[in-house]
Amino acid sequence: MGISDQVNGPYEGPIRGTIVDVLDGEIDIADYICPEMAEPDFTNSPVFNQSRKSFIRSFCGARRPKKPTLPPKEDAIKSIETFTEYVLPYIPIVHGPTVLASVSG
Image 1 (cartoon, helix red, strand yellow):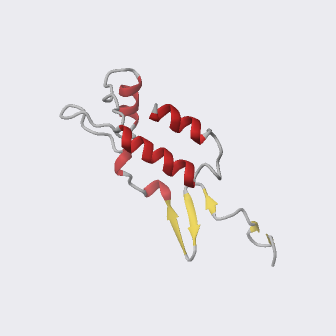
Image 2 (tube, helix red, strand yellow):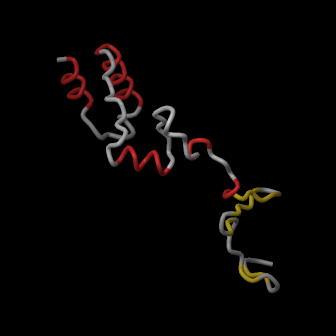
Image 3 (tube, helix red, strand yellow):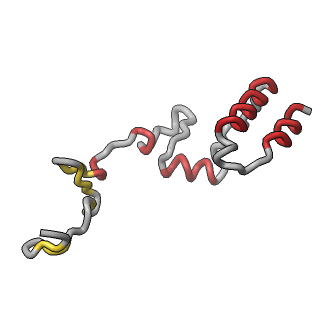
């Protein structure tokens, strides 16, 4: 009947609020339980996840993450060579030889 249905009104798409129409069924994404978003018990261990409390504690400096370490020089050079070979031709955001020279030197 086209885009407009005389009984139900115009077609609004597959998403209605938190319900997504997928193939022959519907999924309510509000019912999805994501372990990364669960509020952890902060009394036992320093858990870093995507929960609101974890973000606020990290942002305010109450719980600082460990300082990251750099990989060994050989691994860094190999990663840069792989990046310049496969990614850089499509996304030219840096000058490959210059970056490689700065890490190698």
